[in-house]
Image (cartoon, rainbow, N blue to C red; front, side):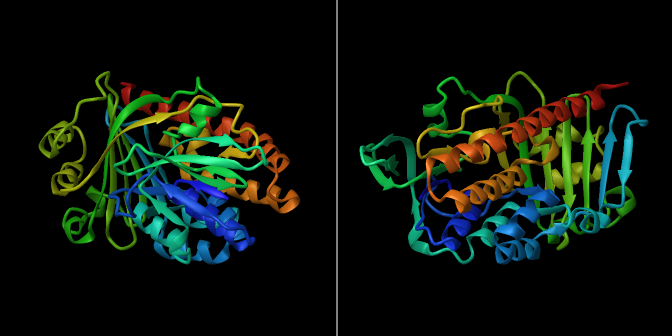
Length: 364
């Protein structure tokens, strides 16, 4: 099986396929694994899927994750729009697993553990695929620094490469991502965050996930168990191509956000800068022995933190169908028929919530 993408969904999928006795080759555009200064949120259903698929992998993820204890929502423009949900520690008893936050690098490391080195093809930029006369498929790619087209022959191709998927564009040429806002994100190490977060009344409590919504921007913040603080700053403007340095970011939040937010941004040296986008709902994820998974199929806005979680649920359903019928076209089509309506609801809910959060900040 050829898997596109060595992100969380590609790595988790590789574990599941190898555990079932299939040979796997992962093609990754980047030249190597490297630390990324951000974090993600995982829902209980995602952890439940991992437990069913690979208990050892699920245990690795949980060991590196922080269980969310409290969620807060605050509007900068209307003091009535405030909410505190402080019973998230009860989630395991209700849903079977907790809500967690985890640094993206820690998640990759947890999922990478136990996979053989020889299954990875780094520096491989996938361009598309073609069907072979013997029923197999060829995955076409360029290597880093070369335009020479190379290929991998496989029984099945599963694209978990993300929203920029060229395989998705080959399957559905009219499918285009929709940009929504600009985002800056980072994880501030505990040694720098400790003094800033020393007063929980004026900052955040331990294991808190917080949303602060302004009139034209917003913050997502999380305090991790080891003292690190994850922050993401997003803003809604027409010019998403512009970029801000550290001083400009601090200037934008000073005087409007709680003082600790400006301190966090001012103390952060390295950050990730990106444009947040989603995909329109699609009712075609594959053809023949090719299918899409995760953000390649249903990238959604991060308002509900469903990206990685939905991908893990995809893997659970895909493996269920493969377990039933093996590596065949009917297994892929049934997986798609089950997951497409479910993820369509999640995509729509994420877009609605993203808009509602923006409206929350603009209500006087």
